[in-house]
Amino acid sequence: MRGNPASGPQAGTPAGAPAAGNPVDTLWAASYPDVDGKPQRLAAFKGQKLVVNFWASWCGPCVEEMPELVKLSREYEKKGVRFVGIGVDSDQNVKNFLKKVPVDYPIVVSGYAGADLARHFGNTAGALPFTVVIDETGKIRETKLGQIRPDELKRTLDTL
Image (cartoon, rainbow, N blue to C red):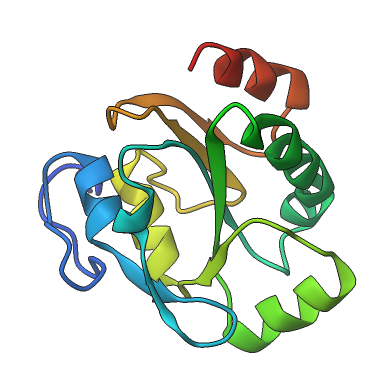
């Protein structure tokens, strides 16, 4: 019998991240390189309305939803909502993908450590795509496993 991997200390916690507790604190403690290899601390988004999308280039639904996320990012930017993509993939795969599909919000490359981070938010399977909406106080407003439905995400974003 296996226990729930989301409860209790986690192996593979992002560097500097607490093993248990508030998953948003774990997010703020994480740091991953951007597509140019420069480390990016996710704490830079603290205090902002934020949509975090865990994705990979090899994930069909992730690829399908990316243009919708870009569109929503542009639409909600003026309302103070930021988007960040966490590529659960290799840096080369992410770079190649972004050459074909332009994304104008920040993308960091976590490798498979991103799946561990997603588990802190309740994605115990580590499946993709996985989207988390966090308000400016750090409260998780929604998590979505699977491809987003733009109308549903808009409803959540409109309440922020």
